[in-house]
Amino acid sequence: MTTEEFRAFAPSIPHDPGIYKYFNKDGVIIYVGKAKDLRKRVSSYFNKTFVSYKTNELVRRIHRIEFTIVNSEQDAFFLENSLIKEFRPKYNISLKDDKTYPYIVIKKEPFPRVFFTRRKLNDGSEYLGPYTSVMYVRELLQFIKQHIPLRTCKLALTDKNIKAKKFKVCLEYHLGNCKGPCEGKQSEQDYNEGLQEIKQVLKGKLSGVQAKYKQEMQRYVEAMEFEKAGAVKKKLEHLQQYQSKSIVVGNKLGDLDVFTITKDGEIAFVNYLMLRNSTVVQTHTIQLNPHLDETEQEVLAFAIAQMREDFNSDAAIILLPFELEETIPNATIVVAKTGDRKKLLELSLKNAEVYMEDSKRKRMLHIEEKDEESMAPVLEELQQYLHLPVLPTHIECFDNSNLQGSFPVSAMVCFKNGLPSKGDYRRFNVKTVEGINDFATMYEVVHRRYKRLKEENLPMPKLVIIDGGKGQLGYAMQAIKDLGLLGRFTVVGLAKNEEELFFPGDSESFKLPWDSDSLKLVRRVRDEVHRFGITFHRNQRSKGTFKNELEDINGIGKSSADNLLKHFKSIKKVREATEAELTALVGAKRAKLIIEYFKTPEVNGEDLA
Image 1: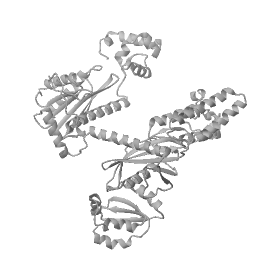
Image 2: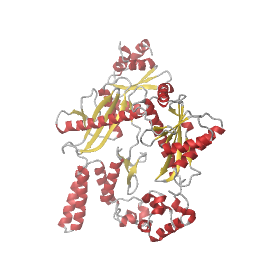
Image 3: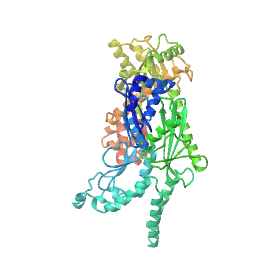
């Protein structure tokens, strides 16, 4: 849209609050904004004699403008936020936060269950959270289980089913973790009172629950029921201990949302502390990438809108390090200068800075370039340091993976022109190796890989990395020699955790410069083969592809076999265990079966380690 075209269009834009949308020539929304005065705000993009390069690029791509009038600035705030989330326009601030966070759900059903979930469904249930710490969620659920008996079964506890006596109480009832609503031993009113306590605890509103426990304890004391009073006192002490873990400063701060911002170049990091009843119940930091040279005030306002919605915050006070140019709906902004509130801002800023430094460190460990052209100098540098005869445009890396000395698999990743070529990744179920033997396993998978490339006349790699050091490198070289491929490509070993490279036959290792892009590429290749191998291993386990060797023993079931492997860590250690050690874990009868099994010649002669 040219300036002349906009001038003809401008009179149709009202002087009202609302949101505006910019579309490119393909009809795609590229920017969404809000304004107190739509015409004044939109005109500013076309009437300025000087704008930043980024803003100029945005204006140059505007082909069509749409606007929506709303009743108030607050309505504009909410509508802009929802449109940005829905369309993710190219020139709006982008939020980098791809994690999924857990919720605690109170299920919509008779005698509602309370449990952990990562899926927020539109099923009418009440979802509390999200929580940024899984450990914190599990701690909450453990506290609930200890002190507020609720059912965990999935039975349909309708009034009709309970009256028909369709169910019987389970072990949880006898352990005191449930009051038996399935048999009508607990009324729905009593159950709901427990749910209300849970909601108060989950929302950080502990004073009401504490007051209730104190009154209950006093009633038991007056009735001379000291055992029951002691149980309630224990609940109260646990609740106070739980609360004391999170209090940061003061005890009169009430409900607050605290936000601070710090920047690394153009990248912004915003930390959020959620205080409820003077207790920090949530803390989270996000990374934001501005696209139009937005001010810190604009970036922070965007982050506040996103995070208060994501975390379902209704705090009436927002604590900030500086004033914003715009208001935040349903909240008062307070800029702290001294006292406990100032300490909270300092704590929040410290969290943001730690997150920023961690993000910088991670970027240093990985190469950020995504195109082949930018990777060419890195490959040239790697060629120079390793004295390779050709540019390593095709790199393959092998790694073995096993679980506690059992269930071996291998993986190979491929990088072409310095970038992952995922279609060329390969997984290997080990076929010829008995037990755990990383050396023989490496021989097998390398031999299988390059035998196939040779037979199918496919391109060979320029550089092969064997993750595992000298021993596995030697077996890989033997496989390549047996295939008649010596000299066709360069092979190096990568020592585990040391980032030292070994050439075949060399007694000394070689280290790439610690700050070089070539080392970052080698790290990236190594990390990728680890990730790929571990994912493959995990998937195979979950499918039940692997079978625990101990399950072959007549009289030993899957549960016992898994417990043995978990305790002793490997088959070899199970075989070497004493009868007393085995008896303590699985009982005398099964222990004798295991001892007898490993005494048989056909088993004892195999390498099961």
